[in-house]
Length: 109
Image 1 (tube, helix red, strand yellow):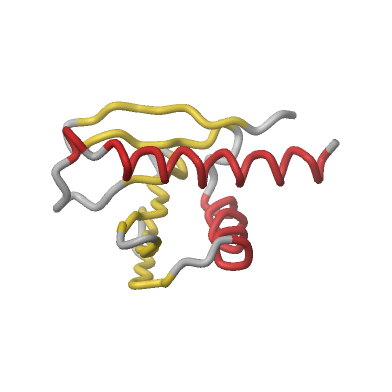
Image 2: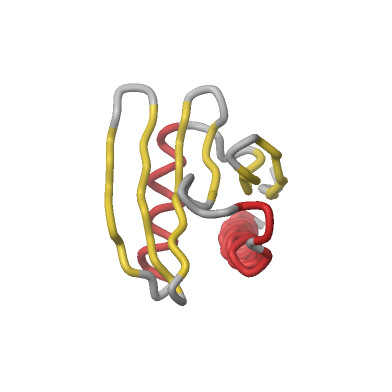
């Protein structure tokens, strides 16, 4: 099974989602990868009944790792950012998503 990323467009902006990493247990796998392999600052960690969020900061850009039972796991920019013109933020999310799936896919080959 090859893990991949894809983008979903919402009113709140783009979400960089993980194909075949869409369960709540996969949230911990992704969070562990980010914590151990990317020099980020953890800002917040919220565990809810139907969703989980971790807020990180990297290169002065805040982003969220989010799990929601209807969406799965994804990376997104915080709602307070102006998403329409944030090319640098979305490029950062794509790069992090790609690093995650490349490492996971290499381990499962």
